[in-house]
Length: 164
Image (tube, rainbow, N blue to C red; front, side):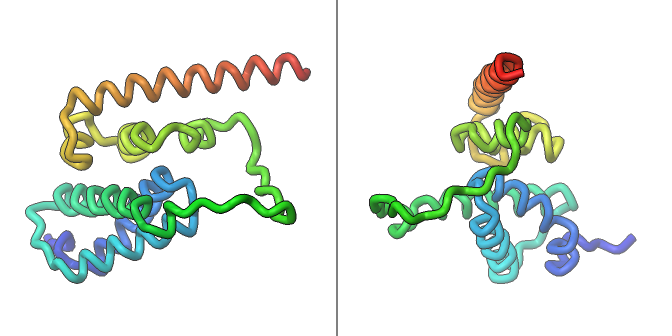
């Protein structure tokens, strides 16, 4: 059997969607997610790590994606705040009441564990390794995120019933 987990091209083809989804879950922006995804695969090419297995390769890519997304918010130009112009167009509506929107509305520390657990099917132990956190921290963040999601979705459901 051919070991493709050490071939950067094969890894990029196989895991680019997962890296993008994680980056998007963290940043909430398609453009930023694309930038993060590009940076992850550049780091893969530069570092040239040797992976023990397919799972090791995927975990490495997602860990780097998580770190790159976090680094994006530390950039100096991200910290500058300017008053909004009156002539800026309103953001486009993407629909209301979706679970994806509710997940994206969560604070960043909750989005990544939720994404990895529900969208990438990782266990709590695997998420802890990817995020560099303890299993207890991951469990706590998942619990709190679920509570926030439940409240948000119930609130939207209740608001929809009032309008109807």
